[in-house]
Image (cartoon, rainbow, N blue to C red; front, side):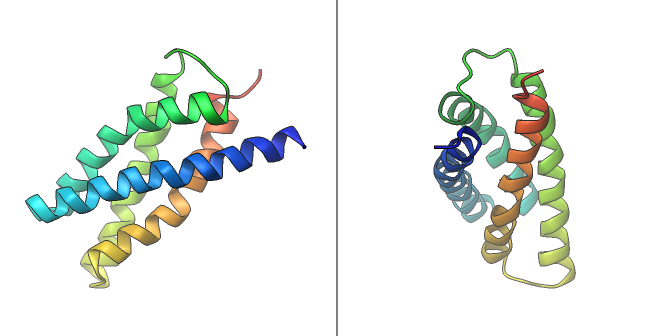
Length: 124
């Protein structure tokens, strides 16, 4: 099997697990506190370490925490994209919060994969 395809295949599998983890956290937190900004912030913060470990181990075959700062930087970048997405979808267009976050989780992981592959786990 082509190694690049294997990495992407692993990313898709782990991405589903990570997305389920993040979305479940978001739903629970939004249900409890009824504030999308706080719910998405806590969800992102708790997801950073979980996602770093799963992507490092199962997608990019990396050990340790030497890349966590760069990983966190790009993860925070997509956090702001997610906040902007929710603002447009929920506050401006008056869409359902749960559906809006689900839609964000269809494209934000792809952005994360690209940024991680290109900058965090690149073979320089």
